[in-house]
Length: 380
Image (tube, rainbow, N blue to C red; front, top):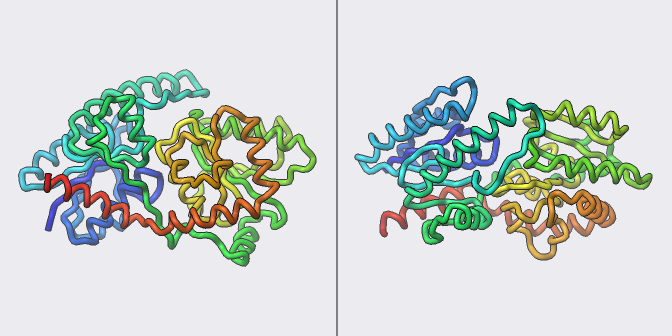
């Protein structure tokens, strides 16, 4: 039996890096390895394994920012204790200063967040970014191996932090094909009936927090406003997500007289929502990967995304019309939505092969690839 220590904020099924860390921990546990988890929160499925040990870190004032020093301290304490007996340690980004394996899901040095709501929120964002930048630089400089979720992330680490390329290894996220898969026509009809969605109108989906501008909802809203000014535009927009600006965007839609936008807030049934929809839009200003887009593609949805997002590098040339060259350009997004609406059958057909390819690479495949890097490092 080998021993592994994994350090991150949460080991749960929701979220990009949280889902990936959950998958790795779950795979190791099922292989009979001794798994130590340093985190604020761990899903009950992982705690049910007798070979999983949870070293819980209190979440100070329910803030990841305030809790990060404590997570770092507990992670280093357990790493010192377990490494003596040969345990391998995997941390995430700058959350723990330990020089073994580091898994990077987001590069703080690659994006400057912008906050539109409240001076306090702006101040908090500025302080947290400085702290994350410092922790990120220290942790990555000392790592033996650095795993990244896309070639885009790898390039950012080379350009922004001068990390040697030979220490970087790209491993894409996996998927659960039993959860994210295309619906049959009958299933889609039933889902729309249950959701109260019209059967005769296309549904466009946006998924993301309505807080800072990184997710690009402002660009989508501007494009949607122009589309709704045209009498021939018949699609509805469903917005999934919460955040500091949710109420603000609801008011803006009401003032603009746009009745075709439905704000759903937080939802736990995202796979069903995706299967019932027709298209996803993600005009992100920065996205190291984009698991939500990945999941939409696995459900068979054409996804209009920023060309600079990590997931965009998975797109074949035939789907290049779905890639936004500038996430600030609402006019371009409007044109691409019109083009999609004009030929939905063509785009659905073109996405099918990519959807099948992505579903063939599961979370277990991802975990196996990570373990291969562990083994290769031992041989070196």
